[in-house]
Length: 339
Ligand code: AMP
Ligand code: TRP
Image (cartoon, rainbow, N blue to C red; front, side):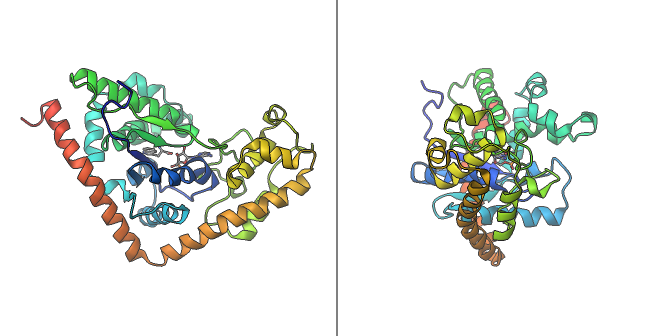
């Protein structure tokens, strides 16, 4: 039997409404979701409960949840075919997390590198929620028996934990194949988009420097300026991938170009090898503006009609609950909470 057992193919993924969406979220995750809608049912969640793990202003959380939903649609997620919804609106996420808290082992969570990065030196002061974050993520995925989870590379370890939880639940309760072991899909030329200021740090919502990232909400001028100021080395672009890999900043910019153009990095190198960054950067800026400008415009238009966005989120939550509620009843039965 495959990892997915007898389960039908289903995609689940999510983004936290905890800051401005950036090019890393788009190229590492959301862009890769779009074509999957043709292949299998898809659920795309705004993981607002995850956003509570670090304090966030309540008004900001509400606003950002709508923004992420608008971004999904602006990037090409079709709310008629896929469910777009807020995590907190389907209570099974929280309920299943508790069951999984009793399946997951403390030793497993202690190995999570993202917790260590996010909690920093003062982990005693981090919220219990931040520590438990990957268990909630496992519940997100398994509440729908999702088989495919398209994410950026930074989520790989969390997906492994999800598989461990699914496996242990299936074993401990003697229900083989109850949960599928979901497959991480880490796709595209840029599974890890790096900061524009530091080729060794990932582009992130929480970097204090706005010049480190291109936000989905940035104007054309801001995009062009950030690309112009991106850190590079003084050498012209190389002609092989091997030479590129030794130059993190150059590699990042070529990767971004490749992902935006929808072509492999080799093709980009074949076109620009030997050129200095002073000619490559304006071309990259133009391409970024050409791709991201229309997304920003669609996002702004969608955010003008909050009532329509709320209707989409309501409908998405209804479709999601129609899958998760019956699953939760089965889980209650399996663990003995229901006779
Ligand atoms: P987050 O912003 O942490 O909620 O991430 C949402 C999605 O974007 C996840 O699938 C991440 O793996 C992905 N992601 C976030 N930052 C990056 C990045 N710098 N490069 C590639 N993917 C990313
Ligand atoms: N942890 C993910 C991130 O920060 C967001 C997320 C939460 C997620 N639940 C998920 C992604 C389930 C995929 C599937 O990037």
